[in-house]
Amino acid sequence: DVKVTQSSRYLVKRTGEKVFLECVQDMDHENMFWYRQDPGLGLRLIYFSYDVKMKEKGDIPEGYSVSREKKERFSLILESASTNQTSMYLCASGRGYTFGSGTRLTVV
Amino acid sequence: TQLLEQSPQFLSIQEGENLTVYCNSSSVFSSLQWYRQEPGEGPVLLVTVVTGGEVKKLKRLTFQFGDARKDSSLHITAAQPGDTGLYLCAGVQGTYKYIFGTGTRLKVLA
Image 1: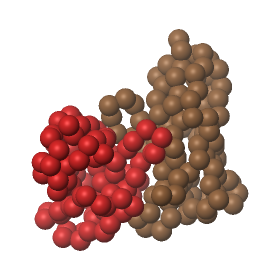
Image 2: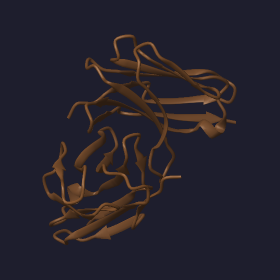
Image 3: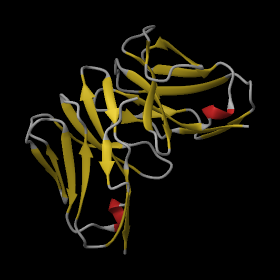
Image 4: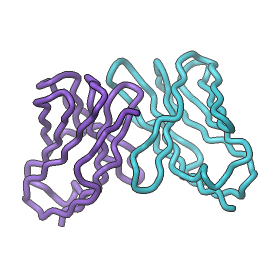
């Protein structure tokens, strides 16, 4: 089975901190995605990547950046965390998406 | 951000009952996917429907794609507590654009 692993299940960070969320997939997928999930708003696409070192903005990229130095790893970076970035972050890969288990981030 | 409208938002039923969840949009999709998400986990892909009017069955779950490829339904027969979860539909446009529904939270009581 395809596995998508997110490095942390729960994170608590302070306002202004730089936050790194890591995602690793083991099936050689070209496409990888970062979403955030909020009640009533569904899943919203932050960034995606279709190849190493390639990235595209999704619907809500403000306050985020990404890095894809290796095919299997896609990192989401919160440059200066804010309380409105408290959310569930989900990484996905492939076309029939395989999602990771998610990282619940709380910014205090 | 464009969203797919799902109805109902919440559903609480007794074990053994049947139910239908709807996913509607004014946009046309090349395909549509259904996912189930359990608390604290990421969504898991259940099915992808591609052709207008297509019907797919997964045990007690029946998925249908609308003829015009703008809507879809999920029917569960004889629901069981293990069906409890958040059901999400996702319409696919092009290669990378997935539009997710607002979700239906189902609880099946034993």
